[in-house]
Image 1 (tube, rainbow, N blue to C red):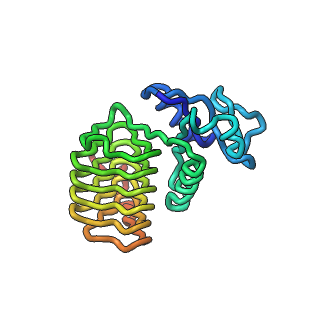
Image 2 (image 1 turned 120 degrees about the horizontal axis):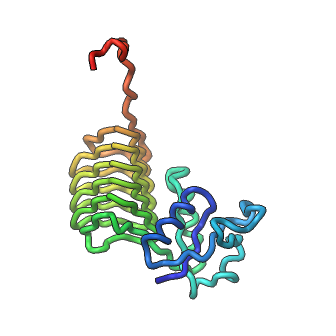
Length: 220
């Protein structure tokens, strides 16, 4: 068990607090943000908020761990920057893996990962640092997810795939087996990837267009 400081005072921090409080051995004792983002009242969800600049004095790294469950802003590079700042201060960064996730990869999961319920992680999968897997993804056998990656929900990553750093995968994206997603690939909602991608490429599926037939005219 660790006493943990969570980075942020918005939705992701609130969710992290919930999951850690209800489904982990860790105890959240405070939140932190940079001084310029400190709230008027330095309290969030009933716990103190401390300026990041004051964190080592208030909660020294030899006594506390940290968790930074941030969004994919700027293709995960904002989350990477905070990850690196914490590491430079000497903090241990915990990962949260839901007890309702199916993890068959012998714990090959890095630091500061946020893995929610109903993920299926098959054998021989390797997951790097600072990775977010939102609810309900399938991570196929012998695949590798590198650092600073974000999966939304219901993504299918088939077997023997490599996801390079900084990638983002939207809801219901599907990746064929034996593929490599180049660094910084953005796979949009519902897109199907059938071949390797180039670094910092973007793939999106066309939105479904409404039919000219009115739903009022249907028999069901």
